Length: 268
Image (cartoon, rainbow, N blue to C red; front, top):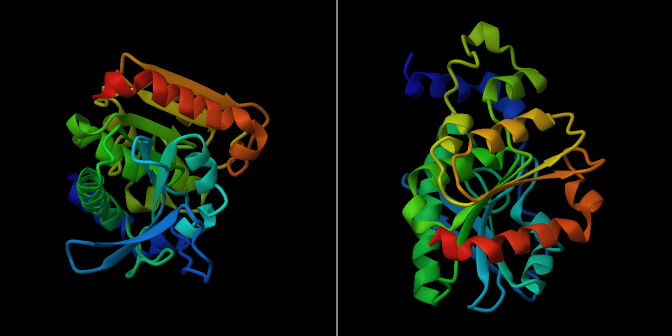
């Protein structure tokens, strides 16, 4: 069965009701470093984003958040990035935050490319060209790896936090009967592991020691298969899926900033 037909299976309501938990934008003042962006998708749907901007000489991270999150959830976290010289650009999937439409796996992967093109062009127009890193957390690892596998000449590198190596074990964990749908580890329509296997840009993998949703072994597999000459694995001791930043504290940001500083020249 080809990838398109397998993706159609993932786009079914039976899967989407478990895989996606969209939330609408709530009313919140934009932080002083923040700026909202609207990105038109190929089919006319408007996608929302919130950017937390450091100065023009800063690193840039294009970030795809986890499930159940929206860009505005990062209003307290974005300024932590700008404080250490990183512009943090947070994207919303369809149906999440300020984005229109309804989420699906297919649209998430297609939209990742559209978002990248729009953001890359905007950064160049604004003179923000020091570096561009792609980062995905949890569900967002699929969007990040979709870009990292296909747009390597344009990016400096990749950061994966709490990412999944294979989609079928994740679907089983959240309650999807994958056997009845004909989905197996050998037939993985998302292909995170395969995409990581062709990513030669500097790569940082972050994972929680006690992740109960996406076990540590997923992060280890992604790191192991990555062919990049410069790669790093950071396990957050004592952390679970949703508290890595809290558990790691300042170490979380120092690991990211150090990796960017050490590898931005390599990634160009």
